[in-house]
Length: 204
Image 1: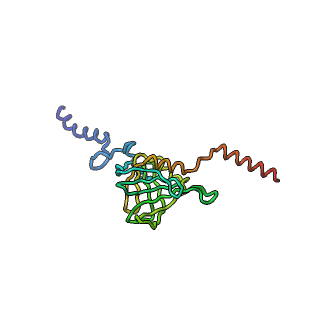
Image 2: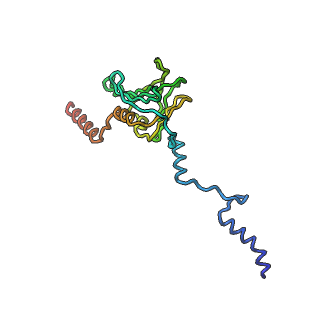
Image 3: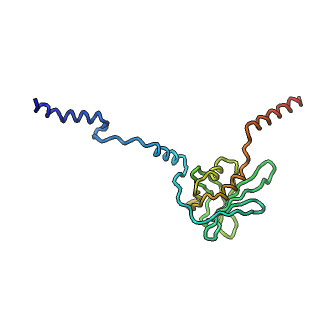
C-alpha cells in the first residue's frame, strides 16, 4: 500500500501545480499584472506627459519689459536663453499674446515645452537678431499654456534636436498667469445672455 501511494505522489503534485496558476504549456508562471503606479506611468507616457523631469540647468529667471510689455527671461552664464513676453492687446477684441523667444544655433520650426503638467508646442520662425534665435507667439488662453503655470520644478524646452532644461521659475509662472484672461463666471455669462434676450424683445 505504501508503495502505491509513493507511486501516485508525482501525479498528485503535478495536479496541484496546474491548479496553482501554471497556465502555459511549458509550465512557466504567467506575467504578473502591472501595479497601479506602473499603469499610471504608462498612461502618462502615452499621453505625452513628462512625469520624470531631469535636473534643470544652472541659471535664473529675471523680469523686465520689452517695448513696454512685461517679460521674463532665463539666463545662464550671462547668456539669455529663453524669453517670454506678454504683448498687450494690439487690436481691440483680440486680447493679449504670449510671445516666446529662444536662443538656438540649430534653428527649428517649433518651440516645445514639456512639463510635468502637460506639453505645449508653439510654431516658430528665425529672428533677425545678433544672437541666433527663433520665436513665435500663442494665444495665452489656450489650455496648453496653462501647463507652464502648473509645471513642477523643471521645464524641458526643445527645438528640433536641441533641448535645454530650465527651472519652472515663479517669475515665468506669474508672467504667464497674468497674461491669461480672467475666467468668466457662469453666472455672469447667464446674466449677459438674459440681458441680450431682454434687449431683443424690447426692440421687437
